Image 1 (cartoon, chains in turn green, cyan):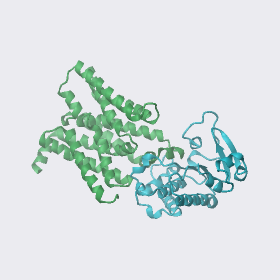
Image 2 (tube, each protein chain N blue to C red; image 1 turned 180 degrees about the vertical axis):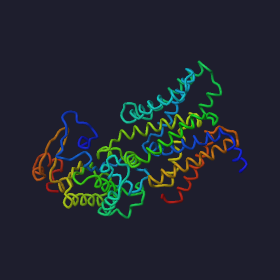
Image 3 (cartoon, each protein chain N blue to C red; image 1 turned 180 degrees about the horizontal axis):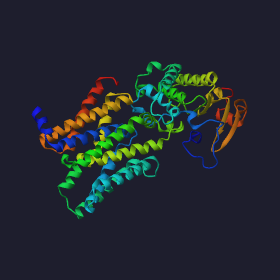
Image 4 (tube, each protein chain N blue to C red; image 1 turned 60 degrees about the horizontal axis):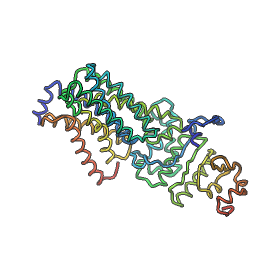
Amino acid sequence: MLDLLKELFSYTFIIRALVVGILVSLCAALLGVSLVLKRYSMIGDGLSHVGFGALAVAMALNVAPLQVSIPVVVLAAFFLLRISESSKIKGDAAIALISSSALAIGVITISLTTGMNTDVCNYMFGSILAMSKSDVYLSAAMGIVVLVLYILFYNKIFAVTFDENFAKATGTKAERYNMLIALLTALTIVIGMRMMGAMLISSLIIFPALTSMRVYGSFKGVIICSTILSIICFFIGIVISFALSIPAGASVVAVNLLAFILFSIAGLFIKKI
Amino acid sequence: MKGILGLLKPMSGHITFNSIEQNEIGYLPQQTVVQKDFPASVFEVVLSGCLNRRGLLPFYSKKEKTMANENMKWLEIDELKKKSYSDLSGGQQQRVLLARALCATRRLLVLDEPVTGLDPIMTSELYTLINRLNQEQGITIIMVSHDMKSAVQYGTKILHMKTSSVFFGLTEEYLNTAICHKMMGGVRNA
């Protein structure tokens, strides 16, 4: 085990993947609690598909992937939030509509240009080799921004998540905080997507929150537990992925699933804290 | 009512208060589905009512925490402080939300069908509490209700709405109107 870890840390690409991954998991877990509780879990999923479409188009046009996908996904996030709030098409249907369309556009673009190659497979299911030095800087910056904003606005985010109408009625600008959450989610997804894979990134958002909700009964408890849990699961997932040579995204999700099952069983026996 | 709370913009005209700002209103909403499995301790919920006092400042001070504690004591829910909101009974949850509304206001409290889903004992307890708030602390109460009997019993002014205002005035006058007799099933002074 120790040898494995030693070997693991001797590769720079693994160190990069760990740094980026831990920061992304941290952000995803924080945002995930609000998203899950506001019944916006599917937004994460929808956004990752949009991100995939944007990446595919960026590849075809031969431009830097992040520069294209960040604005596209941010726009999509605002749009999805809008329709979830008020529209004739119900929120979940609208998300399914947008995510499958984006995926289709991505797949068409890819088959018309490069064809279905390993790059595409990596985007779909993630690769720890995908992280460059600039990704590390970007994700570090983003991680710090998300963390600081989340702590500063923690009480407001709680109030808006718990009861948006009350917050609005008593004079809090709820829309602003919804926008903030959407923006941060979009950033987290774009950065985490290439490592976790477009298909699997949403699990980073949903799993830790749901898992901690099995055991904890207070908002603070859930937030703290899900960030710690998310980081631990990510680390174990990467180690397993390295040891068994399986895609990182899939193994991280599998570890998260295991944690969810364990917490669910624990939740049956102990009273919520 | 959503107009008073700033949740909806009026179709025409605008709403004026006598020197009450948006962040001086307390609001007790109907229960929403989202809250049923929400992980939040009672104290967190009550404290969130103080949010509008903080403006842009990010954290609560000791003053707000003391106020949340006092309001919980007043509503006799201080021993539930650490409990999870979702584990409470309907009546207890309603008290928690009332405590939160009290943290938000000293002047005007808007109640949206506060007793929906409560049993008769809880209902009368809640009305007594609200009545005491009005008498002892001098907070103006606006209540939307389908519970005509209690509305007439506790209210001092009645606004009866169909699609437009049918009656507005003192409760005693309301009891003498034809529409009131019809709504109360012919029983007067219930």
